[in-house]
Image 1 (cartoon, rainbow, N blue to C red):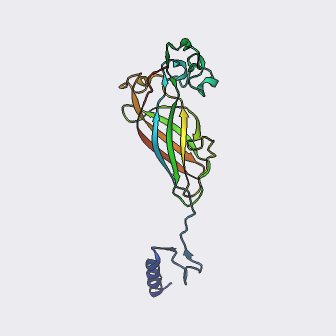
Image 2: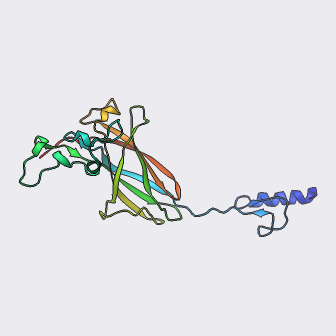
Image 3: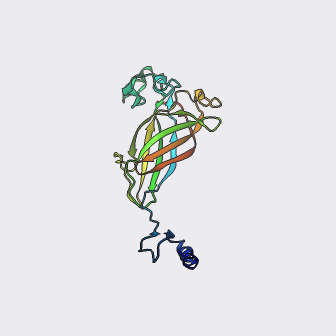
Length: 222
């Protein structure tokens, strides 16, 4: 390519750079060999909005809360149903059993809205981690995920969001038995901490949000 033709090609590239890319060495327009056109595949764009939540309360069932050892010390079945066992709320007409007049077994949960602002359906949506933030702002513990439901319908969520679609999810997780074990500045019975929630999908990068402080539930008189 002589100097005149090279300068002409360079000028054409500069004129079209805002919409296409070009590769010097070929002649002609975007439909001829030597031209490279930039194209972006449609993709989802999930937005996560925290609405509310709490860390649960395990005063009357301490074996069911999350500990530094890595989980609840009760059996696997009771982990998925905080409040089960000796400290379950009494049935109508029954006394409080071993709970001393209080029901202090409340599973942790939060409510989150997900919106797909992208150009393709999001699939395989899941909660990758629920981090409890310590006094230094770093993750002090990863709290186990238990399950989620569609907060509006009460039904299961299939993990998919169409373009422009939104869903409000109620997420259950295992709260700390004693929050001061992970966040020393906080009181065991009434303390609070922020959460770092990571939402994943099969066809987009993880979405990470940090919440406002959420608190331990105090005992509820029965």
